[in-house]
Length: 135
Image (cartoon, rainbow, N blue to C red):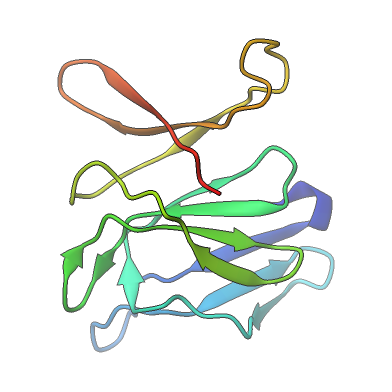
């Protein structure tokens, strides 16, 4: 949910009818109570994408995903939600597998305020944090 825009995003996914993965991106306007198909699409049909909204609510970081042809991928994309552009990062995920993600709010920490920390996945033994230089 993007509070400043009162909007939610639906990125990729699977269809309910005949099974297929999707490359579409929809926005839901809370104010208008309607879904809109956005003109931008994912580069391939994917589901199981880990998505994180940045603190300034300008970007959504998309990590991994499951594709029709390649299975799980290591790609990271940055979705600019002000300009509706999607750029592939030059950084890849450390493994080819399903990922979940959450964002650490670094704005209150003087030591980390110029960095973005994304916690990429949980292992059976502990938590691994992956600082990424995404741009």
